[in-house]
Image (tube, rainbow, N blue to C red; front, side, top):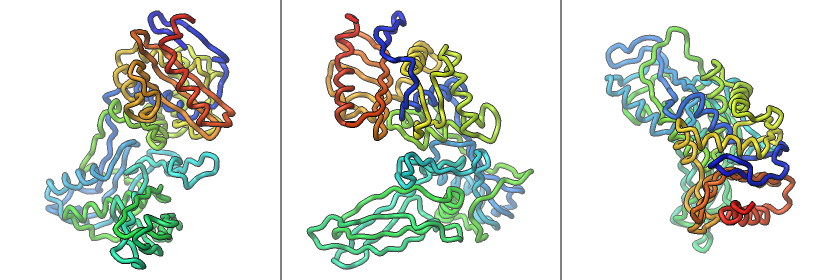
Length: 430
């Protein structure tokens, strides 16, 4: 625990020991990205063709390629399609391809504790939309025994549905209802199997990672083009590298990085953090973006603050690795420096969760006289917090707590919250 005016240690225990920090790693990743790229940085995603359109027609293929936009959504694809339409384009003679070559590997499934199917284990690729996930909605029919309706977003023929589910009786909401991937079909589509029962006129949503991000993006964008009145005459849609000499037709620029990390830290978005680590490496050290390049930059940013190199060992941008280690002192040093750095302080601190209000702290420490802004971290045996605590006219104080080998997560979290509530009262007397 540190005071900020002046910066000095109030209390510490095993503060130099590298421990598994879980999602607290996102604090390190976002800090390094803000320092190297700056809060105003915008990611770029472009549509390419080999030749300039002739009249209303693109006379070959379209390629879509991003520099690792961590927050590219379906609505952004729609905007790009509309901008093509504004140029008078109504036809694409070739197919649509997604280029993921800005990252190496081009697609990667993060898989903590061998729970690869869990939604918190993201699939990462440089050109991605909607966090490389599909949102399925299963809607019960009007009569028992009928097949429910299954819809998905973003739309497109990447999805092939085997609907084995049935509408249940009026009393049941859902019984064993599930949506699971059954793997790729071999034609660039992914089969999803819907099983169980759902109540009449009841709706349930399921969000699943995709297996083939390039085919997902290409087929989704092809559908967006169709819906906006642009006919794609080629049958091909899938992975493809932008050829030399291709020209950008439309470029989308993301929101500023300082705005985007709001969702990364406040809601602890693993996909965004892993994307950001790779994007950072590729943008600063040159493509392709890799974990090693991103980690190198995070470590350099910490060493520049005086953090001993042996106190931080990273293998991930989100904390989804038990090989990650970091000391409480490393986090406190970074947090104190960020607080005093006007170039990043507003965006960095505002990205954190707020007690009793938003993010991962919205239902915790609900005391009106205590203000907590910070990042939480949780694995099945890890509980952590890194951030700022103020209250009763005192503070803010910088606090980092990392608990490993936890046997009761709920009990450890309650103890941590109780400690944070008392920080403004006990800190001055320590």
